[in-house]
Image (cartoon, rainbow, N blue to C red; front, side, top):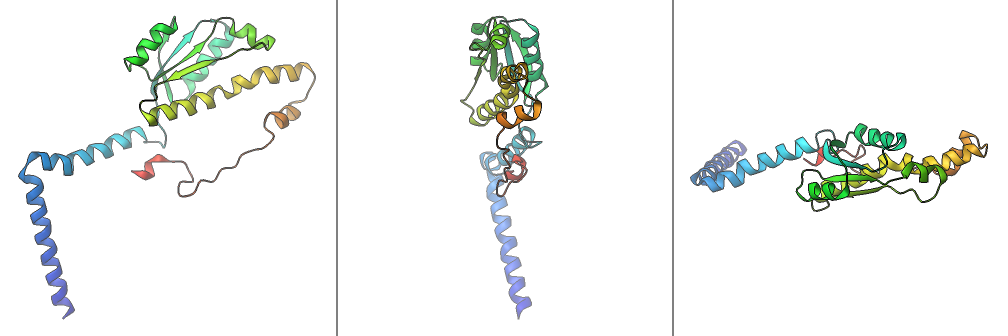
Amino acid sequence: MKDKEFGYAMKALRMVIRREWHRMTSRRLYLGVCVVLPLLCLFFMATIFGNGQMENIPVGIVDLDNTATSRNISQRISAAPTFRVTKHFTDEANARRALQRKDIYGYLVIPPRFEQKAVTGTGATLTYYYHYALLSVGSELMAAFENTLAPVALSPIVMQAEALGVSGEQIQTFLLPVEASTHPLYNPDMDYSIYL
């Protein structure tokens, strides 16, 4: 009895599959929307999030300081896997135009006399811009800029503390008083590819 019911269920399933396949292939639009488009989306997401994060996003650098410190910062940005420095600009206007044309998705501005201000501790600021119309790219760039430039932001404090004779262990305790240990639920490796 159960074998007979199973046979009817399988026959009905085959008929439904055949009917739906006929519908999907009856018009090219249906085939494209039901089969081709989802496969292209999966391929696109797999290439972007292949290693769990976006990589090689084109960015630019506007170095108006041209010192050893600014070259060190440029090397830090170039070494980050999220970034691919495609162009060095001489002024912000050209970088902004490239960002608006989407030749690059972000750029870092190292202002004039940055090294001098960083050494003296008088308001040395780095500015970065990123395209946030694409939310995933914009948020990835923002996080990557912040993580890559965090040691640069702390270096004047470290230099002043070392000049005052504070040991390296003590510097660590007041720079990083609490070590964060994150354990996100359902995605412990922070790997985007599991959502594919």
